[in-house]
Image 1: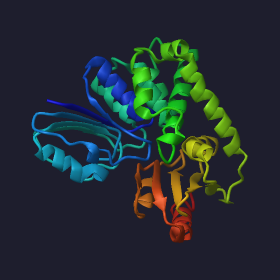
Image 2: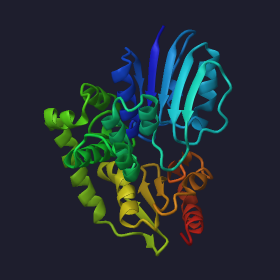
Image 3: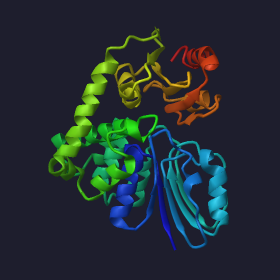
Image 4: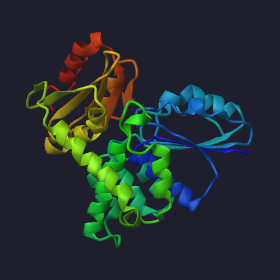
Length: 321
């Protein structure tokens, strides 16, 4: 019997798995990648009796491989907050799916484990830019306000680390970062005891963020804004957290952050307004390689000849937020 842990390479996916494996350790095969690498079940060659855990990747995007894995005789535990499509009816599948824009996979795992690793659940939720949700999770806990801010920063930095066109863009490969943080029941202890790793994330974040903040919008009005980032590693790393920062600074405005790619296309991050979390998934889903959640979605490879069409659809979607 083999175990496979399949998880998104961002803060939410990593922290969801940390919670589970600290409570139920397994010697599993880790299947992950950069944040945008979501068709991960294709890498799992399961056999009868194997156990597969899938965290923070869209079931709809992995549906054919999910069917294949289930037909192999493996059991699957699937937790996610992205578009699920039609969930298969199988006695070998246990799924915890909630597509609410205010829910993270780490929150769902925290609820499943009845708060056994609350702090890690909060880190993953902070990382998904669900600050109010994370603060609500911690309400009534014995975690001090200064520690809450530490958890917030760690979540942001872990999320930032997942962005890139491939693993060479990242400061830590997601599987490596998972192994580093897994050793700590309390994320605050990771920050203090593994300070060199935390500082590597923090310094990289601030350096890249300083560069991206210097960019002016390509188009902007009171309802929406479009930014264009260059084809550089720092821009690819900063694109997601920059999108989140814009959303937090302008909560009534929608944002599209496009990053130029070497093939002439664009990597796209879309954030719906905080005050009206809708439309991002439907918008991005109209384009090949697009998908996500109602509040936050993206397109992995927008063709150059689709750029003006995307911008028009984006502005129409968020014309009067």
